Image 1: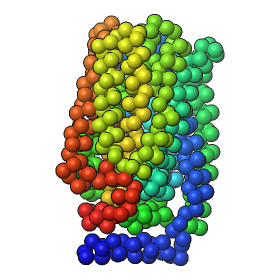
Image 2 (image 1 turned 180 degrees about the vertical axis):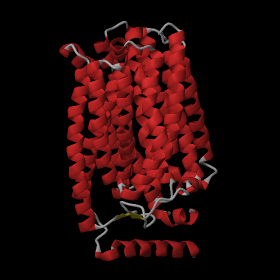
Image 3 (image 1 turned 90 degrees about the horizontal axis):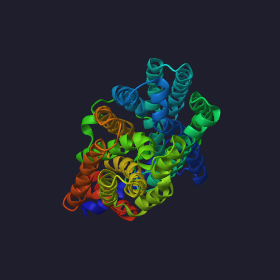
Image 4 (image 1 turned 90 degrees about the vertical axis):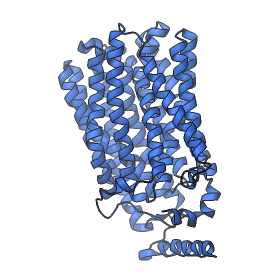
Length: 463
């Protein structure tokens, strides 16, 4: 039959690619494990740095003499730079490869972190905005590169979600350490600038690991060649041949459905996380140090779920089921924060949020990788996702800052913004889950590993 012929051709394609240029396409497991550990170590450092700013909101407002709207502008400067540059860095990452983009991005990020620490030392708000801009440029380069790297080693349902889950789980630990210790360091040293200088030392560590990984990646490519997707026969190349703007317009519509979900879910998680410490201070009537521990625990308690979720997705698929569960959980958490503003209600909201927010990043990123047809366009696809999220974050953060200032710095009214975003995520998740039953293009995101390998020729025919 035609289907059997397509499968036979697909198997031949894998065989041809496996011996291409005399290379062995079977990359040893120990090489992949070493790569995952190095990239995860880099992610741990960058997540540690990102966890600091949210925990220091009250301290920054006091030390720099700024209000919520000005703090929102400081936060939004990061999103603005990412929104402007992220598409270019997506094309650039696809072109030069994830390892190179990771190395250069960490260098720029470290320069930015030094400037942020210097701005904190001299207590200059304007200097800190400029420093955040430089740091954001580096962060923009790193974000796409980190997950692009995994695309070079693993295909969907063949290790990509598992390694992604491991990296994100370690990243949550890094964010937890950064957020929970930020106010402790500021209190013990008597100078909040030491929080940012500690981040500088962590970033120097990530630079060393990035350099080692860059050399390691080149060695692996030389000795073992490219890995191959066992379902479709696609070669998982490090670099695309050229820049192609039309890649954005060639992205399939299921990809845009995931972007719509991320528009609500990621923005809700981002704005809630950045204000969680201050919310805990007010609702629990506790110090900034204790609030930092509470909010960090609430946000990152689900770190152990992320690797397990990655393994589940690799083996059993059901990505849209996870998306719908994540959206419903976010709505429940934000509803508890809005309509249960007591200590017990807020504690319950933080607990539910810890689990629900842990589901989002893994399933969204893996869903994007599974939805796009070609692995060498993942950098561009993920860059579009970040651009959309950051544009939304700018709008939401500024609105939330203005609403909170008008409410005498309380969280009674502004939580309604979080509820709106969570409701959007829940609605989109349920619609996608229902639509997967009638649309083959959307339905393949539900496929298990066994189904994807068996129907690899069908995926090729859908392109």
